[in-house]
Amino acid sequence: MEQTDVIVLGTGPGGEYAAETLAEAGLHVTAVEPRLMGGECPYFGCVPTKMMIRASNLLAEARRVPGMAGTDTVTPDWSPVARRIREEATDYWNDKAAVDRFTGKGGHFVRGAGKLTGPRTVAVTTPDGDTLELQARKGVILNTGTNPAIPPIDGLAGTPYWTNRDIVQAERVPASLLILGGGAIGVELAQVFARFGADVTVVEAAPRLLPLEEPQASTLIERIFTGEGIKVCTNAPAERVSHHETHFTVHVGQAALTAERLLVATGRKVDLAAIGVGSVGLDEKARFIETDGWMRAAEGLWAIGDITGKGQFTHVSMYQADIAVRDILSEGTSAKSGKQGPADYRAVPRVTFTDPEIGSVGMTEAQAREAGINIRVGCTEVPYSARGWIHKVGNEGFIKIIEDNERSVVIGASSAGPAGGEVLSALQVAIRGEVPVPTLRNMAYAYPTFYRAIEEALKDLKEI
Image (cartoon, rainbow, N blue to C red; front, side, top):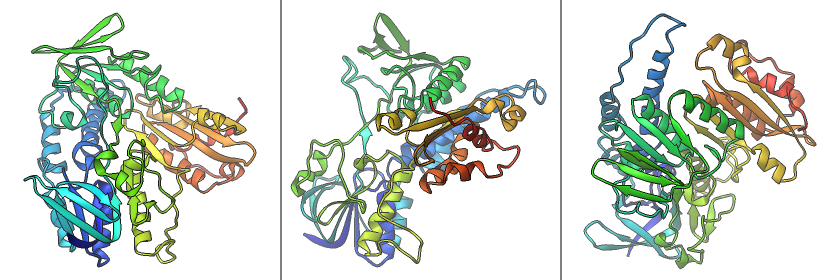
């Protein structure tokens, strides 16, 4: 059994950061990863998909030239997008640079599938079938992430459907694309491939797209999609899937939808049994691992990232990793760095990178009402703001604010628009800092900016 100070089981963004930081601090750190060091984000998620989105948004902007700045001729070409993903983002899906960076800081890397076998112990099955036993003096950090959740639809298993891991490796745009799932991944990729020429249909079992967002966001995106020729089927659970040589068929109610390719984007799943959490007294059938504010899940065990259920976002994983690292190094709340703890999730932001972007932070209106909070709601439309009017074509969006009426602080907000994710930052600070609404109202908002519309949303606050 090999001895080490800390075992990092799974190296998504948070695990990679924790492993490197602890190694730099002088600890003997062993990182265990069965796939690619860095996890989903750099190879199959955030980075390559946002390269796709950047390219598709350029096409959309070019098509907006007529009537605004002249004439245009736009011919989509997927090859530079695919090349950039291969060469700049993923290095052909090779993590050598990430591994070398970690080992260069004194870390020890083990390729294989790790599983807890008891307190502070991990067994690793290597690619050649050998088993390596590891024991940590300080403890284990779990950052094993999630995998695509494949629904048990009749006929789906065994077909060559795509998940997010497949579609980012696409060398060409299919003539037609069916997408199961109208969440963030589904709607982002729907818009990308439609703008590059695919005939796209989104099938969502829930009553609306982006079901976790405000209803205004769903209405906005469905309207945009309709205008761009993307077909949307909501309240439409898929009942059966079949595949023939050239196309998929998805049966939804009485309709049979066909396309060359099928993307399954119906969420992510956690497999706690596979990483052996039962060996340390945790429930292997749980949806997530419960932790305290310092990310401790058990004695000598920390959990970060998707498996904690606090949001499947790189920024959450990194945030939690920093807290766990400070706990392991006994730094806690650090006066030197100004960093505090324990974890606080009141103002966790999320952005759906459609065009327009949909940013959200804190509670939705429905969540606040379900919590029994006496609220006021304010909303303004971006096209009617000064910057929206100047921007003109492509200016769709809104800002919505949820106020705790008794405390006079903002507890939730959504920002949709050409810079929706960036505008969200001001609202996040207001929520996290519990800035009084009168203070927010008594500010000068730069003219003409998109974020100036926050002022109008604040003026609109009223009980509904």
